[in-house]
Structures are given as structure tokens and as C-alpha cells.
Image (tube, rainbow over the protein chains, first blue to last red):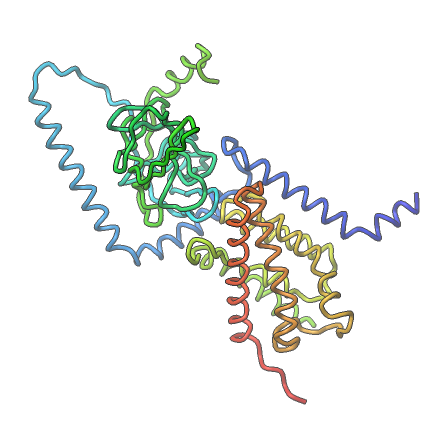
Length: 273
Length: 171
């Protein structure tokens, strides 16, 4: 027994190393599954407030870009308003209940050059933000909420290698999936477009609206390059993302009003699980 | 010694703060990342026991992880570095060093600094990027990321060393 203790004592550094390495390995694996909430992330109160003050300081340096972004957004909304006004004059339009709630939030921490990127926004549980809500920027979709603390929320960025977005080609309506490959924050891959579908440079990819995270028809990106291998089942499509993740200041969080009802119905029917 | 210890702790904390506040956003060409906080770990006094070193490495890695939202990745790499540091130190100095020697570029010379710090930084970057990727797909992409990050971190460390250490008094 004494020998054993002596052995452990002699190699104590190695054993302590194993314990700490095992602990961090456990944390890494626990974090792999991005559906589960992480123990240590930047939504905590202390780190969240440090991040907010850093982003408040940085805000002064890009006021010009923010102004441009806002005026572009205003122009887009004005255009939308005009089309709404012209269609409202058409008779017998059914009253459509708005399906999605929008809430504005500020990005206080943003990464886009890592392999799995996250954003932190300054709205949390106290603003009724929950996991699995969609996040949309001024130019297109940004990600979905992973977990929320009282005043902050962590958003899984579109630039996360495990995050897949149900999308479709705007022109033909064919379903596909958007998934980032971890290389360039400007580009993403579009998967599962069958070879019989004609895709070309400049096709717009939008959200499909088949899951209750994003509303239908939100911009994701524009097809940049289509490769077709002779013996492959699907096209290899590279898409230029419409959102510029390097310059993201304000986003809106969308929540489906009847998300719970829709999901539980689909779960009941055993379509999804 | 106590004065030295305080200055070591201050340097360590400053580097950690620099890492999470400034260098987090200073990424060159989407490939070179800066992990300057690990210089604060590598240059801790040699008298500190291995258990304390590993624990300090773990917790500083965890703090950086919280800001990067990469739970456990930096921590695992920092623990690894802190574990091999004493062996590597004995290897690079071949056992001939005085206790109480300040580990900095003026005391130990550029050659030693390069031979001691660069491999440790490179190992740290390798661990970080391969653990982050979780597989050896895109092997050379990840390798180049680690290599350029190591160079970037090392050059930053050199600049900081030359700026903030006092030249050795000639005797």
C-alpha cells in the first residue's frame, strides 16, 4: 500500500495532468452537441457585462457603417410598405395573423473566424428570449439562439459547422440545406440539390419556413459557383452569404407565435423527434 | 523573490486581459490567431510546482474559453503545455540554470527564447486547432492555421519582451 502511495506521489504531476485534461476533454465533448447548453459561455453576468462595455467602446469606431446600414434598412422597409399599400387596395384579401414576433437586439460579442462561431446578444430570458428562436440581421439570417441567461443570449452563428438551415432556391422552390464548411466566413455550402434541378450563378437561396425557426423567404445568400461531378447525386454549390458577419451590430430575434403548437403536433404525428 | 512574484502575477493578469479584450479581435488573414496569454503561463517562475502550474493553466484556459465560447478547448491545450513545460525547460537548458533566474529574453538570450517558447506556442496552437476541428480532415488547412498562429503569437511576444524587459546590467 505504501508503495502505491509512493508511486502516486512520485507521478503526482502526471495524475493531476490526467485529471485536468480529462475534465477539459469532458467540457469539449459536452459542448460538441450544440443543442445542449454549455456550462461556461459568454452569457454569464460578469463576462456579458465586460463584453457589453467592450462593444460600447468599439461602437464609436463604426458609427458611419451603422448609419449606412440603418438607412439601407429604412429604404428596404419603405419599399416593402409601398408594395403593402398597393396590395392592400386589392379586395377580398384574407386577414392573416402575423406568425412571427420580431425583437431588436444588439450584438455584444461576435466571432466569425473560428470553426464554430457564436454571437452574444444583449437580450435574455427577461426579454422572453428562449432557445431555438431565429436571429435575422439587416441583410439576411444570422443564426439561432442556443441558450439564454437573464440579460444575454448565445446565438449559434450560421458560421457553425453543425448548424444546418432548411432552405430553398427562390426561383424554382427546390429544397436544400445550408451548411458552413468552416473555411471562409463569406461563403457557405448548399447541400442536397439533386442533379436534375437547374442551378446557376446568381440564384437566390432563401429560408424554406419548414421549421418554425425562421419565417419563409428570408435571404441567406446568392449562388456563386456550381460544380457537377458526373457520378455524384447532388450538385456541389458554393454560395456567397448575404450577411456580412464582420460588421454586425443590430439583429432581430424572431419567435414563431405558434411554434410550440406546430412542433408538438409534428412530434405527436412522429414526423420529427 | 516576493517582488518578482508580484510582477509575475501582474504580467500574467495583464496578458490575460489583453487576450480577452484586444487580441481576441486581432486575427490576420483569417488564419493567424493570437494566443498571447500563454506567454504569461510559459514564463511563470521555474520554482512553481507542477501541480500549481497545471491548475493555473486550466483555469486561465477556461477563462479565455468563456470569452471565445469554445468550452474546454483552450483549457485542454493550456493544461498540456503546463504539464510538459518543466521537462521541456530542463531539456532546453540542459540542466544548467540557476534557481531564481528570471525567464525573459534579456536574461536567457534570444536563442533560448526561440527554442523554449516557439515549440510550446506551436504545440498549444496545434492542440487548440485539432481539438477544435475534432478530426484530421483538412489536415493541412488546420496545420497552416496552427503554424501561422504560432508565428504571430511568437512575434507579438518578442515585441512585448523587448519593450517591457530591462536590459541586463553588464558586469
